[in-house]
Image (cartoon, rainbow, N blue to C red):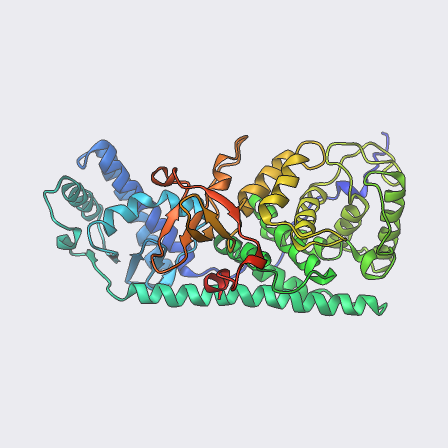
Length: 480
């Protein structure tokens, strides 16, 4: 039996055995309540309020409710909603953007009926849920003025008047938490790089903890992280570039569907991929042709530096891989200096390459003038399919948005606006919605418009306003 040789690039992401992250009750119970309520109301609209399938769904829902009451030792669950958020007994329920959009039916049914709170009590029966579907259908037909008149022994609906204030305070706290994570990452990366320059071998323990916190917030706050990067809170420097590349790489890794552990590994790998520059191994004016033999010799020098720092764990191995493969087209076999066989760049290499170059373009590093995000993405699209992996490039454009959160833009209406959310998109061959984010116009007549909605198709973004044309940063109002 012939011996099969395995290269370092073929190292798989291993599953780490660790203590399970504590998950809030709102994130366990909340999505179940929202999903089943949406399903019941949709079935009522499509099949009629008396259809047998509604009773089947209601019985499934009741069984799950009973299990959750017992598991969490609760006598009731209260679901609250606004146009922006859902809450379980006052605790924010976290959804990704697509899941939130799918709940439009639920929000519409309740908010248009002037109610925003549903209380489920222990002992609820399937018949009570079926009665709610009937009542919702009556409101839709105009036979019942509001769902607030609906009452059942274990199911009640009402208006919570103070929830708007709660939402504002919770959003403010969430944004502050995200800002603290990003600021902390910058500080810890600065300290790490400072020690590297002195020839030390510092620990990345504190950086890893921050990246773990960051990964836990990507589902709901990836836009905010992108907005923070776009604000350029600090001038372009090596440690800022490393931190930004880590954040953008993790946003992509999350969108690809990697696990939490692997998303963190992606960020850790990005932090020290360019470690040779930190240690002064490359002169500032040195020019290396991408893909050339000389480029890989430089990469090998970086690999040797990383090897001396230890390669006894998976993250270290991935750093070696992505450092060696840095700067090479995604679809061409790598030179056989190391692998001794034809191999193409690793997934992490392809992800980090896109994130790194986008940050270099937008920050204006390596002797380049800083570009606005739309022009940087234009560069990316120009080399999509030749240098950059086209699937990952499309994904990056989708998750970052042609006009990232925090951008100040001029609209075709003559108004100036702030981008507050990237468009919700499916990963396909077209990028038509990438230029149609949600914006908030600036000035006294401020209004919010989702340009991807048909009612606003006549409004277009003309350009991103350069920073030097702004007297202040409107994005600070959004983020701070």
